[in-house]
Length: 460
Ligand SMILES: Cc1ncc(COP(=O)(O)O)c(C=O)c1O
Image 1: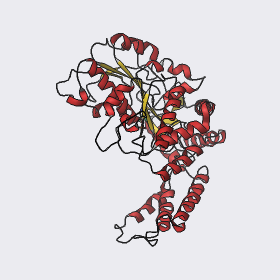
Image 2: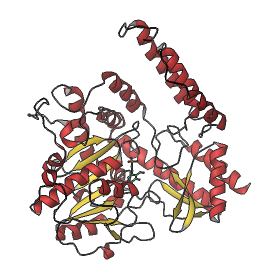
Image 3: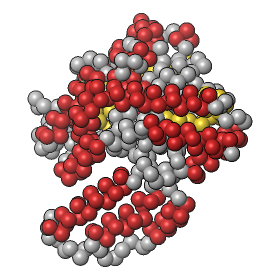
């Protein structure tokens, strides 16, 4: 046992939480001034973690001090204002604070009856999300770990629906002997969407791929004729360019062929909230299902994704679980009937808190601010003579500093220097630095400091 013995939540044990809050405040307060990448020395110091499993425990305060002392310096400042890699949001204060409270509640958010507080909050958050994205009010949804699993969840509903129409019960009988499903996706579909299809037994390689245009949008004129059980996978927000598929034309064609339309909107679906960017995702609400992330542009802590499905019965048919010892769904919705997990944390609480604290206007402002910041990056790097490879329609910018090797060297030096953090990609054969602006705390001075560092290094 630890030095504390088992005194339950004694005053000494509770003191630990104050200690943790102070450490968190110190960490978060220092985010904007520290180097974004951890130093090699901090990474080297992690060797100290390589200890044998302790035979005896120790005071929790020592455990926490070790964590903070060794691991905090070895983190990237991903939650901070100048992390522009991948598509990474921070945590708005209300969502982070709600996350602490949610962890303290430690609710298993599977069933309504034993956890009415969090189940009700999740229901409200789902309704708010549907309103925010202009989706049909009858949508069902589930809170999952991220867009990979929200794609998986929504596509399981799609698989159920198209095979039911073909007279096949996929949940009961699996895919052996089932009528084949045609799955269509863009050449630029995110690899995690292909992984989701593979996990559903629909295969990563048998997908019909539709070519894209110069920005990675699916070409509506290249969509094949749709016949028989078909799932069409579209995308809101290309991970490199931010471009969105032309939903109106594609969804109309899919409807004529009776296909289920799914949209991977990991970050791009949030364009719907902004009057300035809404046109990019025009008609997206006409699809059958949508996957998005809350840990990206809504800025809630990891991990948090949402699956939304127009046909609630299809989603629950794919996901519901029953057993004599488990509470049956009554008048109230059991969250576990809509997610792959049975037991899970109540991650919808943080989504609710972010939506509640930002409001529709605050979210629109966040999206528009980040998009304006992306345009500033593009304008200033372009004015300095570097090629911007994409139309900056959302929050993604691709910049070339010349030959592939030169671009990779500039990005590596930028990561080492520490003012900000960007990654690299290859866009249509050209190596580029990827800038993704998705953090609520990024301010104008962060763009200035980052551009200056980029130019200093590129010119050096
Ligand atoms: C378009 C798209 N889909 C899916 C994903 C996967 O999201 P997650 O890492 O949350 O599973 C991403 C991640 O960036 C993405 O951009």
